[in-house]
Amino acid sequence: GNSVTQMEGPVTLSEEAFLTINCTYTATGYPSLFWYVQYPGEGLQLLLKATKADDKGSNKGFEATYRKETTSFHLEKGSVQVSDSAVYFCALSDRTSGSARQLTFGSGTQLTVLP
Amino acid sequence: SQTIHQWPATLVQPVGSPLSLECTVEGTSNPNLYWYRQAAGRGLQLLFYSVGIGQISSEVPQNLSASRPQDRQFILSSKKLLLSDSGFYLCASTQGSNSPLHFGNGTRLTVT
Image: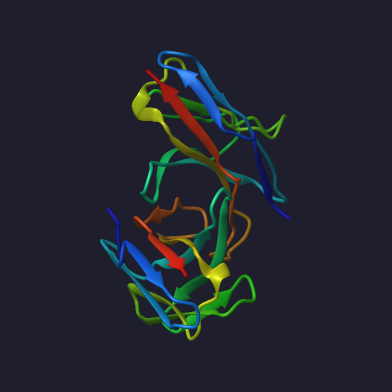
């Protein structure tokens, strides 16, 4: 079956530091990959996505590249801000399945950015 | 774009009491709807999903149930809450299995 593995948190960085949150996946088909962000007390918001190999998703200074050869979708940001403090979820959707439920999430990584 | 409304935002209920959480969706028609639970310090667990009115699929056995009386309304219920039902409940919507989810702001349920 499908699975998503994220690096365990919590991750604590100083403002302007470089961020990497690792995400690897296992899927039977050709999944689309997503990063969601959850700010304190809120629901999840889509941060970025990539639908095929070598695609790069980007938004708000965050980037992630769909690497089929390493089955990875690592999230990066060159200079984090205090406002980036949140929980980040990696997720995949298996496009070969017609079922509405084939959305698999990682366990989430808590990021805290200190001023 | 889609907007997901969930209420209430927070809820404190005693063990054994009933539960009803409501979710409504705006800005789309015939969405796939989901209920997720996020327990403290853990990831998202899919509880129920629905591809249409009256169609509910359960992912895990539990004392919760879901109903979809209208196209854009999804309700999570319980007849008798357990302590283990405490958590953050998120409603989500998508237009297809390969589309990103849109989430509501969630309901934080504390069972005492």
